[in-house]
Length: 164
Image 1 (cartoon, rainbow, N blue to C red):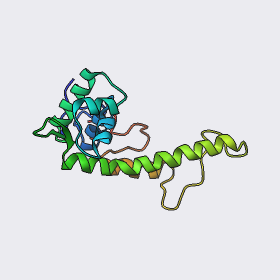
Image 2 (cartoon, rainbow, N blue to C red; image 1 turned 135 degrees about the horizontal axis):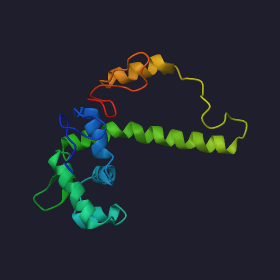
Image 3 (spheres, rainbow, N blue to C red; image 1 turned 90 degrees about the vertical axis):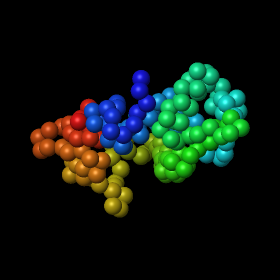
Image 4 (tube, rainbow, N blue to C red; image 1 turned 180 degrees about the vertical axis):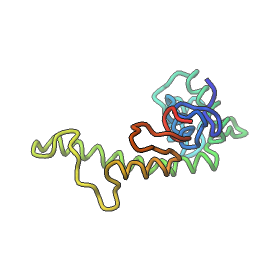
């Protein structure tokens, strides 16, 4: 399987939109974990493998090859692996997702503890500035490079699943 890169077909995009290429890359088993573990500094192969719950060495080797190919990781002269500037920027870009996931986990725990909260799937009131409904979803898709035609349920375009 080829390493996902912008401009080449990837899972979810026949044209390889940058967002879909990144999602494909980071959706691969252990890719995000490798980036996460390297954000504090360079690590040797064994140390990195140990930090990644002793994943198989063949999977770690493959992920490192892919992350080096897309210039998120490089190998130092002493044989350690480190994030490149692009890799550090990717980590920084993903940090808000960590914050959001903590909020999400707390909200789910809170709902579980309070049976009076809306049932799973019931919409909460939108936060200020939050998009709502089909029109809001269309705006988000447009920002990702997709279009949704009226009467069509599927997004189309470079960022669309299966779109082109």
